[in-house]
Every structure is written in C-alpha cells, then in structure tokens.
Length: 149
Image (cartoon, rainbow, N blue to C red):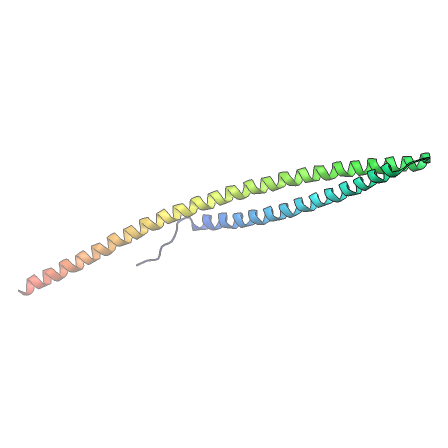
C-alpha cells in the first residue's frame, strides 16, 4: 500500500512558514510598542517633575530662569507629542501584524482541512482497493476448490 501524500503539501509548508514569520513579526512589533510606551512614560514623568518644579517657585524669579523653565516645558511637550506619535505608529504596526498572522493562520487551517479530507478520501480508496483484492482472492480460492471437486 502506497503512503499518503498531500497534493498541496508544498503550499501548506509555505503557509506554515509565513505564519511563523508573522508570529515573530508580531512579537517584535509588540516589543517595540512596549519600548515606545516606556519612552513616553519616562518623558511624561520628566515633564511632570518640571511642572512640579515650576509650581514650587515662589517669590521673585529672574526672567532668564523663568524663560528656561518654560523652554524646558515646551521641549518636554514636543517630546511627549513625538513619543505619542511613535506609540500610535507602533499600535498600528501591531494591528497590521495581527491581521497578517490571522490571514496566514486561516490559510494554513484551510489547507490542513483540505489535507484531512484528501487523507480520508485516500483511506476510503485504499479500503475499497483492499476489499477488491480480498474479494478476488476469495473468488480465486473458491474457483480452485470447485475445480478440485
């Protein structure tokens, strides 16, 4: 009896490899998103400390010192905006990777289902062939026994 061979095995293997690559891309995108979120948190914390420092100032303040504090706050605001845009881009990248992974997994599962159906048809075919051989053997034996009588 010959071994079962799925006719689209090469395609199934390709989808499995692409699915694995998509999983790795998703993991990388998630790590990058986490890094961006941590960067945003650090900048927000530094900005918060700057605001607290400005609130603690009382009494007479030199014009240059106040201008420096305001300029630093503006720099932190720009950095927060930059990190927020990076976080948004990373979130979009993660979502795209999830969609790619979902598509590859769906394609692989469809091919696996097709493989299973093909295997079931092959088993049924092999059983029919085996039964046919057994019937021919039994008929041949019966015929030989009849000839000997």
